[in-house]
Length: 120
Length: 511
Image 1 (cartoon, chains in turn red, orange):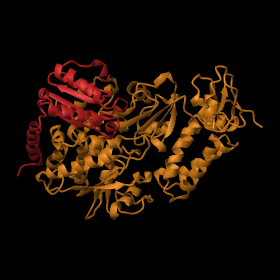
Image 2 (cartoon, one colour):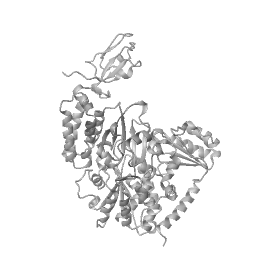
Image 3 (cartoon, chains in turn cyan, green):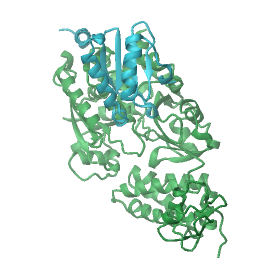
Image 4 (cartoon, chains in turn blue, cyan):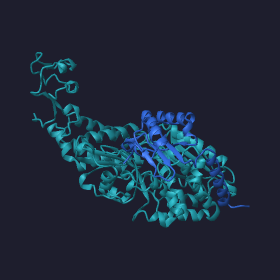
């Protein structure tokens, strides 16, 4: 009989596969804060913008979009993180639905980081 | 390298922000990094590795010893050594034992536990399963307040997913250890965060504390040995197992190891959740992590520990954040609320706010708490209304000390703290209220005087706003307020666009 750690290792491999299937290891990943506090600050509208974009915009094919819990920056919510392979993660703060659209156009499509919206 | 992976992933993403630089994430290691509703995300971030390790390599006794050696203390507020609690429960002989997670976070302004459950529910489940293994229990209960619907939803999903993956249920990961968790909702009573009241509430009884001993470790839920720990305590367990005792006890200081999550609120630039190593000073957390006081205002006090805690002054800013130092300074660690107060706040009014809360939440079982807090609140209300009498402050102190000594549970024993600590540190403000009818922060309504200055252009906006027709003056001429008619509602002050109304509170002649 295999040990619990061995069983867990198999589960980890399976988890990796499952994550692969949903595009977790994509070159571009977007995380939107979706805790109660973030939603109260309007992150559900931001999430909607990203969801629609990922679904409908062909140039965003393969982009991984996920929710996340709150990192603790109450005064700067909603927050959005953009991970691009080989680059430092960019963390946007006080994101609105309007800003989200601009982030998609400028940052995700053209690679231009919008510095004034990044948290310090 | 792998050890770093487990808790330092957070720093690699967020480390560049000044808010996070001095933080150390253990309980919140995954919050803001993973999808809380996707168990794969958690497993891939080395989730359940601690549970696997425990079930493969450690006896229950080893686990208890590890937690004991780590120096972890209860994060719910009182700071009882967690390992000792585990040991006591493990030693009990019983056919059934329970593991309880206290997620009834009731302090006003505290939201650490919600954040953990919403952002990383599996870490709590994993901690509880390890606790179950250590004490020989197969049944866990999470007592969570019903006001946290999203946290509940995510916790339910996490428990379901964990069952499907056999992290909960029978023969976990092929071992002979079985453990499952169910959820019970709290209806929003503050006292149900007290462990004996919490247990009664789970049993379906009215949430009232019982006298201890017997402690829950001996006779808890349904009379069986029960291990009750707070969400944040549970969230620390997996990191201790994976990274080891030496790693954990290298963080923090002397008698307080590891980190503590604080909810920074009030007059502070970076409001938010901060997890900092024990032993950091209040100054560091308020100025370096919290970014200081906004709008160039002066720091006045910091309130820690919520309604059970006390207010500390600028002289105490170099107090270290650990259980003993905070206690010595006259406050408590508490569950982690930290409210920063600037010069615009009245300390008497703040004490009244907290006492109002505890008075409201007193379950009524024991007289010192039920009657005592009511009388204290009456006196405080009188003082802030400008009707304070000589001797009131002394009476507050006397009442407060009796309530502290004679109450049955932690709620009553700590309820007078906000009042007593503000009297101790800001006595002159109380005296001004009582003897001079003056509120230096210009907060207490009844002690304020509104007057019209020479900037008045006679627009009549204030005259129209006044509900008691206390303002006289012809259009385009300077107006005036008839003080004997004024009810201090402040409507004129808010209606004036020319800064022509002064809001002051000066010492008044005693009759």
